[in-house]
Length: 142
Length: 491
Image (cartoon, rainbow over all chains, first blue to last red):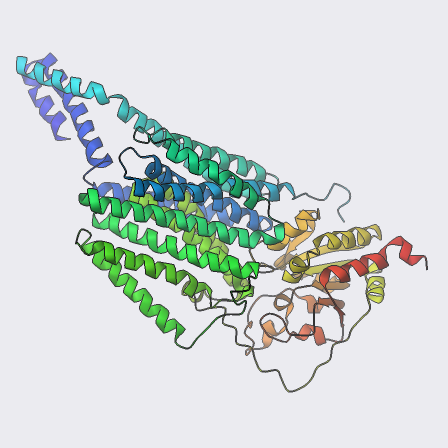
């Protein structure tokens, strides 16, 4: 925030130089934010936005799940099994990450195996069960 | 002027090298966002059996995006470490997807265990790696998230393994609730110790003793799992599975907090809310409070001493029962776990066909907690190709019960026990039930003359209008079918 302002103050010194400086400062600020947020120090605001996402997703989840047909609660459960295997994302980052020692990698690989098994079996069995649900043919009902 | 230009030159030079990096990061974040949206659609389409399969495709697409874009991250470079576990998971995945549908509850429990294991492992690996290499990463928020992640992850792991073992009815796990005096106090103390340990870790994450505390918490979490599930009997399994589902989802959420990843948070929250809603539905269907369930103090149904008076059953032959059903206008079948155990669903379908042929209307009354997991009966009956339009929820069918001519109770027990309405001493008092006793005639199929799982006598069986059909559900329904078939009416 501060650096572009400094850049603009410098505008008095000459339009072209100021523009360059502001650009550079903007990029620099972006770069700094990237390193700070992405890899090393921690921005408290990030956690707030994560909690925010959690809260909203929970409400969306409750809203959507409440409307799920009771007929389909078993497939729903196997589908959410597969969805919660999103832990695969963390497992991949740890198993395949550039700079991790082998013992971390092994744990990641085990986690990857576990979540991938859940993904495959979860989606497949959900589809297998859903294929079985048929409405009564027209005319035959009643 | 020249100094400014040279500064900006240096800056652009340094940025040029890493310029593609933030771009890639944005692309990945965008892909995660689309993936999260697809997950929401996936669940949205589950609202109707007609669109439900579309939901699976959306889910697969979302998951494929998540996996591929994570894999494409610049710092994910050890591809063999990904390919090998991925390849190894294909066979067990396919095998677990093709278990018989009666085994779906234990499959589900097992996959909760896998989910818990994955979360626990990632949390453990991250904590120890950061502790050894980048201790400045261990901020209090992160450590709190890690503690939550491993607690929920490992608790879900052992709890689900025990649940799966109980559902599979393996010999080394007792089916009946396993209780001892002071159980709740022991659990509470252990929980208190874990909370204190977690608090110490949050305050002093980089202390030399931190790993010991961390492993202490892991140890406690592993023990919580089985301690919470051992006291729970088979009839309460639907609730337990739903709660473990929520825990597995919340573990993924905690992992999202640890890894600073919103896709994990959203997908985990969807799973968590699904588990939450299902457990609330199960709780309501069993008239238990949610807090009662959360603290695991449930399922301890005390077997009552048998009442003084000896009541007697009125047995009936399948021939007469079949004749009665053949003349009925509306037959309502109330399936329960007994039907699943006996694998009777295909015979039930034959019964359904025979009765329909005779112009009898057949409906199925599905209690929310019938079977061993939410929706268990629906899936079994759908497998037998009974149209889902004839599977009715408790509230809908109860309106029709007074005009029902024959109610066939098939391996269900507590969900049709009228004592739930008025007997304050009954463990199931207040539980909403299917009004089987309001039908004109009741046939109950029962394996033996012993009381049901909860050890409670079912008054329905002693009503004047009730007749008992003793035997294995599959055999009895087979007899009914035989007697209803056209050839039987010849002689």
